[in-house]
Structures are given as structure tokens and as C-alpha cells.
Length: 208
Image (cartoon, rainbow, N blue to C red; front, side, top):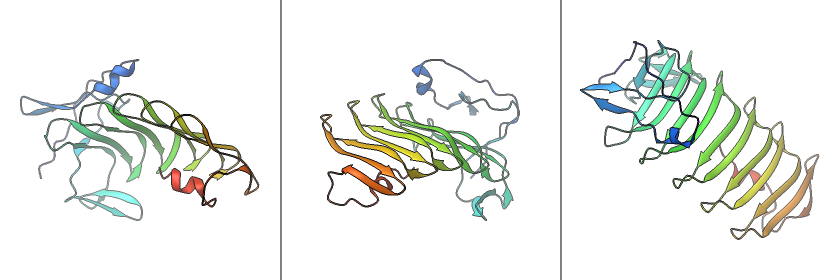
């Protein structure tokens, strides 16, 4: 597999609207023309993700057995469109990551800092409707985690503090009717669970 390395300044196309989800990476005149939407450093190295040269050691990514700093991208089987863009610093996940649908629409966006999830994780259905919004702090759920069906109906709304359920927790049917509504306090559940298995409900829901 041949690496394609971009060391010259890259053009960053920025859109303030949902149109940024249409961005793709295309080949142009046998060179890879990038239209990245993240705030890359002008000289950031970008490599095509190649499983033959990538390995993990002590939870750090290595390329050709060396801890890697820079970006990695994957293409869909058609060889033209971007499937994902990742960023690393000294082998640790760091910066904004994006995944795309084959259509070019943005599937998900998330942020890492020194190998840990931070900030807002967002995902969309291919029809453009919101799918998930989770909040992270120091690699743990923090605050509200919400999920919608492909029609835009809210189906889950959970609240966390330092990775643990705390406070109001709700689940809904696709028609919007309440399915489960309970309160978490010091590891104990109070209220209407509405499910056959009341244990570890959120652990089966949120795996991101």
C-alpha cells in the first residue's frame, strides 16, 4: 500500500450551515485534493489508513512501529469518497474525528483530548435528522445523553454525572409515549421502569 502524504498547506473549506456535511475528499489529477472541515494545522501530515502498517501498543497508535502524530483517513470502496477522518498526537486520539455516509453526508462527529472523549458527540441519520447527542467529560458521560429515531422523535433522554446515571431518566416509544421514566439517586432507581430487565438499562443503550 502506498502512503499519500500531504505536507503542503491544505485548503480548509468552512461552512456555517449543514452543507458542510456534504464535504468529500476526491482524487483530482492523480493527487488527493482535501476539503477538510476541521481546523487542521497547515502542515499537518495526513496518511491513508492502512491496516498493514498500523498497530496498537500500550493503547497508542503506531504507524510503521512509530508513535504517530497527524491525521488518518479512510475511503469508501469506490476509492473516491471519504469514510472517516481521525487525528492523533503521539499515538493518542486527539482532536476532532468525523465519519461519513457513502452519500457524503456527515454521520458523526466527536472530540478527543489525549486519548479521552470530551465535549459533545453528535450523530445524524442519513436523511439529515439528528440521531444522538451525548456529552463527555474526561472520557465519561456527563450531563444529558439524548437519542432520536429516524423520524426525529426523541426516544431516550438520560442524565449522567461522572459516568453514572443521576437524576431523571426517560425512554419513549416511537410514537412519543412514555416507555420508562425513573429517577436515579446514589445508584438506586425510583419510578416507572417499564422494562422487563431493570438492570443496567443505560449500559445497553449507550456504547459510544
